[in-house]
Image (cartoon, rainbow, N blue to C red; front, side, top):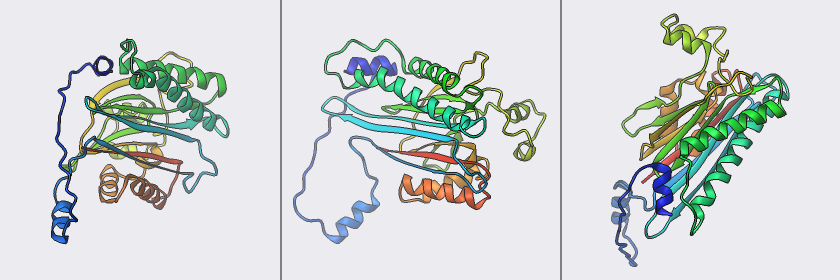
Length: 300
């Protein structure tokens, strides 16, 4: 299994052997206070996930879809968190949008789990030939075909994160977003919007302020369901740890600023509470669109 993981990540990791110290006597109040204020080392590393959705304040149905699965393999030689997190924002009117987003999410989730999970849990298996980036890219192609087949005339964004160890492989099409949140107060968008307005900003023809109110801000030049061939953005990054990974539709980031997203997440007691508070903030700001968010906290 170690060889499989090395093939997938393309990196070598040293084994960590830690001794466990067991204290059976009850802790005093002073000891409990000391423990609560010290940095906690999590062994194995922990993934905590929350999610939330809302129609918003101005929509009568939901065209977004989300999916996540997370697990961990931990034994004498392996400390391996695993997670797959997907968000899709459907387009194309009633039925077409929700069918497109649901089809895309299910197709990608099915492909990745079929290709990857058996290799991770098998006791004896052949080395994994495909890299994580190749698996994600092929999964997006499966999603594209599913959308064309099940929602002709519809379309959807698709932003997905595959976490293995502390490596995050992102697959991205459209204008849903993935962010990293760092302990030092930084929030960083890890995806580029495939929108007409974003391209005009990059070309210097619009300012960021103008882009926020531009009537074409939701026009995409790349989305699942388009007939012309395209390649998704596929990138691999090191997960901030401790830190957060956030996936969200434009119903959140379009009305709640990046800094407010950071403040809401960092002040919440859990990812689930953070997601609820983010949705509440988007609705309080008018909720012009469907809202979907997944927050992944990585502790080690």
